[in-house]
Image (cartoon, rainbow, N blue to C red):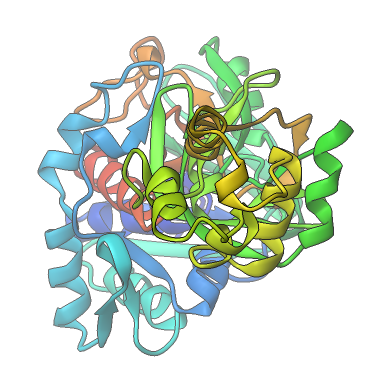
Length: 393
């Protein structure tokens, strides 16, 4: 390929590779520039190395965005079933974990290899060049010129697929936002998502039970998730906490129902059936011992049930169902799996991902203000938005 092509895609991650494959199969000549030494680095570490490549239930309701309707078009036109069909066509064995999460039986490398094979199908040409750090991007009316340390490349179209700033140790940066702003596009303030939350003050006591986890229902800003919460030496983590972290804002409380399967009045029933039992022993039947002990201690009910008024037990029940933590922060982009915010969807066509004010510029994947839940949703957005742009190039 000479240095001029139909499109330059910045980033050889999930969205960039999917976009390149679809454009190449439509006969386009595409150059993919990736600053890392190999493509698909984030794919390779995902799902513990097995890649949680989609979620069978993925739909618009599983995504956050300043415009919750934006993702509907792309997700409807390229669904999790479509991606699963592609996976199966390559003979890649997979399994479903909880809540519709699909993983490779083998390795995440299989997904990267599949995407590279899709890029090689033609009839167009896809040239993937790694180790290409972007020095500058210019537009002279007809041509986007991208300069790297290795050369200068020109194309009629430019696709921003460089992701967000989460997991900086993988080389992630806010480059996509800087580039969008260079071309006058608005950016919704980015913040860490799917990230552990930190605790301070009196809540530091819970650090004593670091490593203890339990199935709970966690809630932040009306978003609730029934999954496991994990206490850490810095605060709170586990799937339920990572999920609500995307909705949490500094200063907000996070509410945890420690016993979501227990009905109203269960402590009074426990008292009636065994007046000599204690709150600690009752909690130990349902929760890990160390967690049960610290909750009982915090509630201050230490005597046998027979000596505790029903009113106090009802108050304890209420607190256990809505235990409020006020995180003093999160572990930031370093530990965040994804980013909330990004290039504003108001700037883009929901059908093609093309900039409304800068024809020829497209933005896809995590660079855009569309963020999925934990469990394969963000990959599905990468595939769907990549296909939308790849078919429009």
